[in-house]
Length: 193
Image: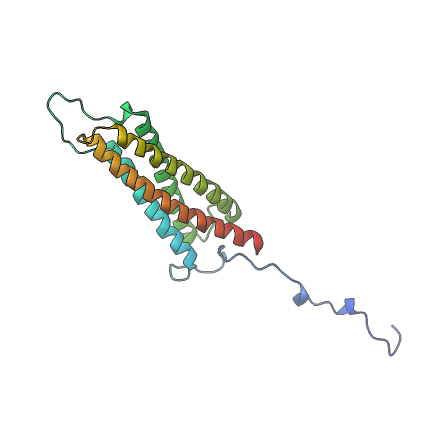
């Protein structure tokens, strides 16, 4: 290098000048201690909404499986297996209950074990797809139950069980819409940032 000449800018390259992408606010650091108070608010909302989805879908399934025992003499016991629409609705609500329970389990494991159960990227994609699929299934089962209410005699316990199941299934649909919006937000945040 000649005297009086300035050094090349590449010689003074600093690692601090590197631009690293900002990590997702939804991932946990392995080295950090994670407690309930230090988890992001989004995770707590997600757990709360998933628990509501579990509650409403489970109540919808239980109301179909065990209607009120107003048995009239000579009348056969109620079984939702005699009606294909009720079997479909029962299957959808059991599926929604199982999915909500697995999402709750994953959310609690993410808080306790710092997100080591499943990768966040795969989890965000799966949650978004499955939430939207369950929204479709729940609204179709609710609409099918509306048509069943019109066909069943209003004095029977089947009619009352179908009304309770339909209302709980619709509320579960609204809860899964909120879950779908939340998982879509998390996925967009991960992709964009």
